[in-house]
View 1 (tube, rainbow, N blue to C red):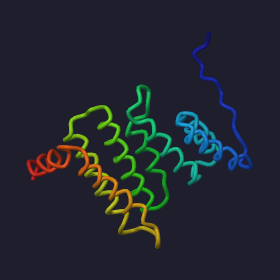
View 2 (cartoon, rainbow, N blue to C red):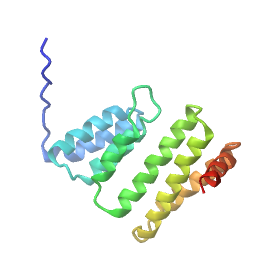
View 3 (cartoon, rainbow, N blue to C red):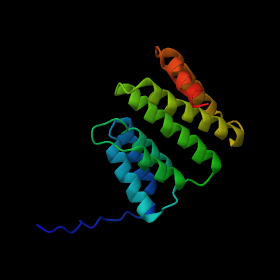
Length: 167
C-alpha cells in the first residue's frame, strides 16, 4: 500500500446549493463530520463561500467534546476566514460557548467552563455593537450563557471567584 494521499474529487459550483442542503441535513441528523466534509468540498472550489464557512464552523463546534472530535483551534481557523467583523465576533462567541458547554458535559472544572462562557459573553457583547439592524442573535446567545451560569450550581460563583483573583 502506498502512503500517497488519495486525490479528492471536486464538485462544480452548480452543485453547491444541493451540497449545502445535504450538509445541513447531516447536521440535523447529528452527523457533523459528514456535514464538515461537504463544506470542505465546497470551500475547495470557492474558499470564500460564506454559507459553507458558517456551516463548517457549526459542524466543527458540534464535534467538541466527542472522542475524535474537533478542537477549538479548528473553529478559530474557520472564523478567521469570515468576511465581516460581526460574523467573526458572533461565531467566536458561539465557538467559545459550545466549547465551554462541551467541557461542562465532560465534567470539566467549573472555573474552566465559566472562563469559556465569560469569553463567549464578551464576544457576544462585542458582536452586539456591530450587528446588522434587526439581528439580535448575539443577545439571544448572551442570555443563554447567562442562564446556564445561573442554572449550574457553583458555576457563577466559581467563575466570579477566579475572575476576581485575576484582578
